[in-house]
Image 1 (cartoon, each protein chain N blue to C red):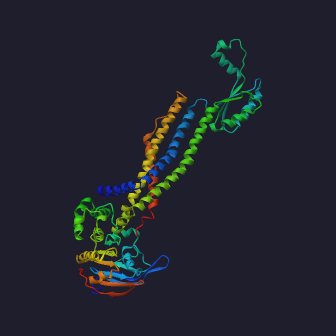
Image 2 (tube, chains in turn orange, brown):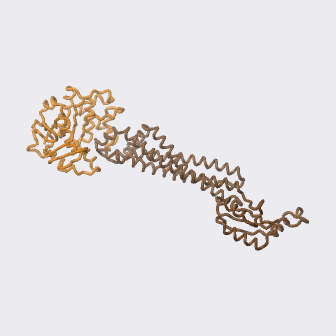
Image 3 (cartoon, rainbow over the protein chains, first blue to last red):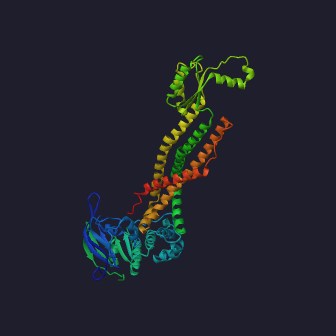
Length: 235
Length: 291
């Protein structure tokens, strides 16, 4: 399902991004994403799919156009406003970014403590979050004792600490075999079914086609196709 | 609140542990530089105060040639007064000197003619100019060529050189080391940033505030500076103790005043803390930008 007929939650309006050295990331992208959608950004390396996510996290800056999230223009946010913006979303990096000397639960707890949760809140919420991504049974394991899929689930768990309405995953299956890739997609799908808007940048076509979600194809910084899928998200 | 503080301090302690060697280098350099600047400054003031207590330290005795007439004496007074560095000239007439001697030692002086020449007591403004003043006075025609100028030359020179050394060490070497300490703190913090880049990235991913990300590094800088200040105070206390024993050996009447340990500790720790904070703030300004 496309964003048609739904309240625009995210709007890219004629977005252009140029990286230093006149490298063009995006060239006039316009599209909307509705609340509760599950959408994939796909394309070749350098097509601009990661940039689409980075504009939302403010890791990348606009050269022209605008990006609106939940009615708020985020292209002009000051640096001091970025932490607040990030707390409204969950970010899942491709490389997991787990602390190797901390256990699974400690990795999630550390992130919670960093955003200001008390020890009591951490003790209460961490088991629930781990349960949500089906990694509670490995709570006391260290990252090196986990499979790639399990590590990615910990990264997703960490992204959920702020209970975000938006989940952004940049190549979440990039380092995983097909079986683990599908596990991760199942987790993301489940979170989408619980109401989160999920945006995934990926080139894992096998998994993407199984998902029956919206697929936005980027080619050389422009949207070359936008195919609807079946979002299970609520509106 | 306490929960928050404990997290921030915990993070700072992790950072200090992870870069123990660099932190040690920064702390010792801060300590040495504060010791040289503050400590030697303090010792300079104390040594200078001691120098002022030595009786006759600023005085020299000038012996005139036998038979110098009144005009020659008056001319000599005027000439000596005009020498830079001379604070005062007092004429000691030979008759008065002999009368005093006769009063003090009547048996020894009985039946003798007055052997004393006329003399001056010359007070100088500072110890550093002693040799120059003495040389100029000695060159006067009315001054006795053999034993014309007498003063505590060696003692003055020793004290003067000591003071000069303290001033030079405190200013030049201390200043240089203070700058080096700043660079070391800066580097230590930068290394910590590198070693903790994963934690920083995670904090930025989940939206931790700038305050939360920055404060542990600032605390690290403050701890390094404060510990450096503390060590410097101990070194100064030790230096003061050694100086006290040295002065006690020179004179039974001269002692150092009580060592102001607490105020000095407060000043040096505060200086170190502020310096550490500034250096760490400078070090994290760019690498900790939200990206």
